[in-house]
Length: 185
Image 1 (cartoon, rainbow, N blue to C red):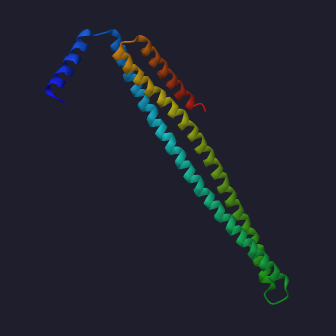
Image 2 (tube, helix red, strand yellow; image 1 turned 180 degrees about the horizontal axis):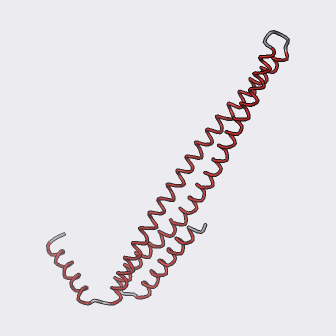
Image 3 (cartoon, helix red, strand yellow; image 1 turned 90 degrees about the vertical axis):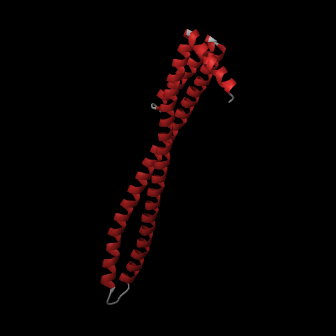
């Protein structure tokens, strides 16, 4: 920026300050409030997105644990059947094989409970992730309306058009309404 342009900018700023138009003051305050609101909503949008990703990742972990437990359950089921067949076959180790087959039944009960518990935890985390994702979408829309309100407010200062300021206020109110709705869904 040249010295002349800097001087012109300074002159315009000084002139605007001297005019002290009430609309400019009101719109400037509106811009500040919308900017703070947009920053808060934007931060919460980021938090909701992170919560959705985190819950989804944890759900995958619990699904992997459940899958491992079910795989072990199936392997123990095969062992139980093999020991059962061996226990039904006459011989010196038949009683030991029957006992081992019976023990496999108890091990399978524990594995089944673990797998089902991990699946329940996975389902809970999927629901948490879906709720966070829904909130994220609402917050994205709220932030967009607030940002558009800031832009329209700026144009209302340039054009000194009061109706544009009213439109910006409506956009801000819409953004804040969507923000409120995000916590109800």
